[in-house]
Image 1 (tube, rainbow, N blue to C red):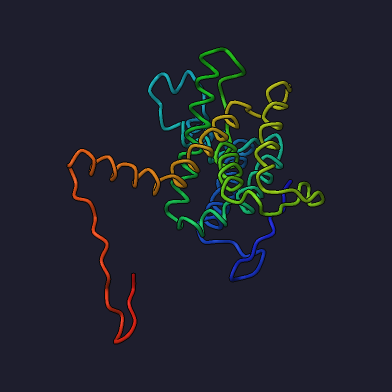
Image 2: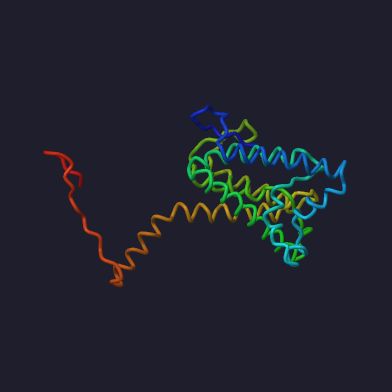
Amino acid sequence: MVNVRSRFPGGAWAPTRAVLGLLVALVLIQLAYGFSVNFVRAAAFVFDGMVLTTADVLAGQVWRLASYGLLHSLMSPMHLAINAMVLFFFGRDLEQRWGSWRFLLFVLLGVMAGGLAVVAAGLLHIGTGAAVGISGACEAAVVTWALFNRDRQVLIFFVAPVKGIWLISFAILMWMLDAVSVSEISAAAHFGGIVFGALAWFVVARRQRLGLLVDELLVTLRLKKKPRLTIVPKGPDKWVH
């Protein structure tokens, strides 16, 4: 695991609003999921309809590309615990950067990117073509955070200090190990999250630069007037340039 040394107004362990709400929702849904499977099997069909499977998505049940992220394996509580820790350590910083609603949209798109990768793997007969868990969004959060905080110090396994950018290598290495293992972890979902995280950073970080390039092109084509540099008076003897 990774510990991010960061400062928040409420303290180093203070959760942000969207992250806290998401974690509470995941825990409550997991409890309901486990309770229905173990004690009220007749009600489990609701959760069965949330699991991502390639065949069901191709049959038109596209909501599974998002709903599967709300469920986690009942075989191991650590599946939810690890994902929750990743969201807590990295999601808070991204939420403060973007705001709660944009962060939640990022999580949703990360889950869907992982789901599409799972479906693609299923079509190629790589793996089971099925998945549960919010791992796609977690991988996306790690990669995006690392690209925004390349020189920030993190502690791998709470011990080894490294720069943030090295988290991408760590994420790719873990994905490769998952891909060749026989565990239930979906390497395809992780891959989709990694790719989406990199794309999300590129779009956000380069948005202003891309906007300037578009404006310059429009000015060159005479579809837009070149902006004028104006000098605005600030006071009797002061000017803002």
